[in-house]
Image (cartoon, rainbow, N blue to C red; front, side, top):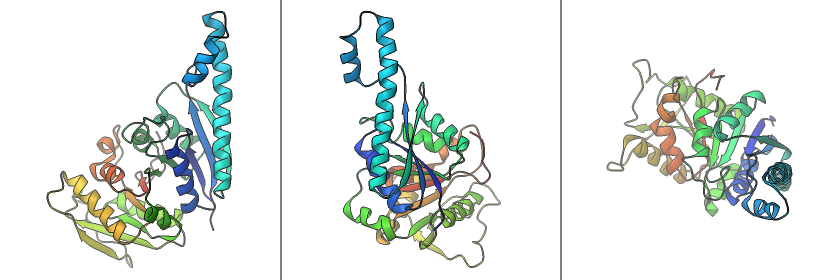
Length: 291
């Protein structure tokens, strides 16, 4: 089985740990960087309180936070490595300082390390109170590599599907969809790949809507009327199909390259992240190589 290079965001939260478990089931042969981003001089609240009582001035306090905060970050990354090892992964820790903009930092790391994939938890990276819509969204928006977002929690049936379930690829006839199919075939070797078109899916330009490649069979499903905006209706139809097939993951592509990455990466892709209740891989446009 092919070895791929994967960056996994880890912040010690249950969602981040769940992302490690899901990633190891989906990509058992991966080489992994368990990555923790920390923002000096802001170590954890409990550590700051303890340090404040043991120093004589603000400069000493800041120096102590810098020193102990970095050590705390490294211990956290090592803990993630141990979890990854238990899950069967060959992993190493990667700790980076950041002064905000975690999504951009992950995007830069993915490019610098030439990673094949970035994995994040939908409630990971930004602490126990972060939700999809902040750090996880930003990682998807800016990263020039495929990003897999693992929702938390996964139900028992969804967990069981990770090891051998098929992978569902959203198809709308665009180059982005073709790119998503190519990436899915490379990252999920040996898996059954099912290409699905939701009736009513819009195309972004006159040249879109091309027929599938020769030999590619596209299943057609209908979006349920009255389920909100177009993107959400399509996403819910993909999610429902995934549930019916006990899919391990969904894969969707994005269109075009622009400063806003297709205005927040496209309504269908983002709605699928928020509503599919299965791991979702978002694949950037083919040949995108800059942040």
